[in-house]
Image (cartoon, rainbow, N blue to C red; front, side):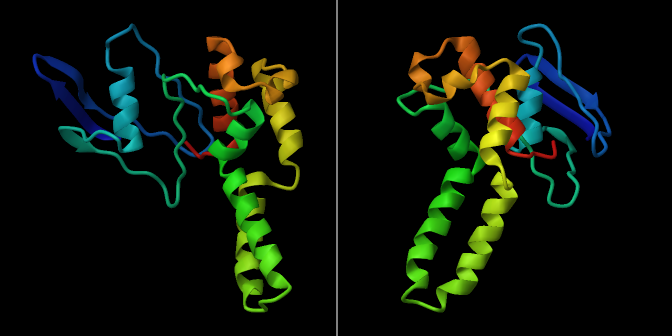
Length: 171
């Protein structure tokens, strides 16, 4: 992050900010309400352009962001985690291609790629990683089978944080 500057009408949110975060480092962005934490995060995520400065990520870096919006709806926490991490989509793709293998030998190469993608996002023990992530952030495993709409605000935030942890983001 080099010389990042962002202005809103009548206020400078960020001025000439530079930082270097190397692989494996953990960073927290802390501050009072209204000082620009979300603006900075949105610039880092590429959702908002800085007025000046540059942001450069390492090769193929995957960036995760815990949005302030509440996860909500009829989807269960387990389904939400699978969707947010890409596991649900990867599992569906593998299942669809597996059914084609019996009649279409050309699907074998696609199946191999899809299976590799599934292993990349889920690992060989996604359910175990889900339980460990939930335990690590204080979300009871019983919540995995509950709809998001039934959770408290804190539990929804924990579910969103679990999705970030499970997604294997670099940043």
